[in-house]
Length: 303
Image (cartoon, rainbow, N blue to C red; front, side, top):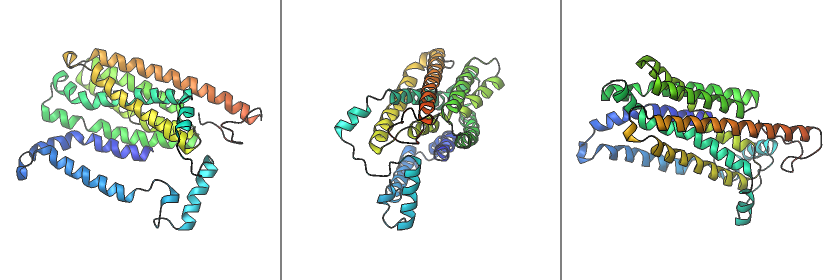
């Protein structure tokens, strides 16, 4: 998941440069710049539709029978739900009663909020708040995302090695919030740009971290589908909050948006602590044989 997201982070880092390049294509072949971007996007989406496989049982000739069975066995060893689990209305309503899903959705909202904020407003902060030109602002927006890609890969590797999710996400959200405060309230351009590196650098792991945190602690395809949908809704709400909290009249410091982001990030950290304490208590009971988790013998929550 970290590798997948890191690729999008790197692409996002070059978004400002690509945007500048698209302005140079304006009017070429009688087309506006954004049409070139749309053509490339549509081509990639078509290739993805033909290439990406959603599950081993539907791999067709892409996987040999032995390879399909190997993947299915790995899924069963991990969470025991390689079997088909059809989504029905009754299952959806049942899964929606699980309070943990809404915690993860809030975690994702508080993770996407600063991401949207930096994407929308970092060039403005660099231009109007730090005095750089339009072109310089676009170019200076790129390097923090390169750092974010490296940190995302390292954090993903550490999470797998230590078999934890929540604590790493919490640390990243705290550092992201601190970075945003420095970006806006720093006394010098160097300090504020450092804040952008800190905020963006530690921000980008949070989204794949939360999605993995959720997926690791859910059994059955139907429940995972419902939980993923609720999480993605939370992520979208983060974009809505960013567009409302970071108001143009407060440019280039955006104090309301910054403090809203800080408050939601700290709330998310508290929710992660609550989740991990709950998971720890359930794991302790399962290890002593007092109770089963999700009705599966030997299955434990990932903290």
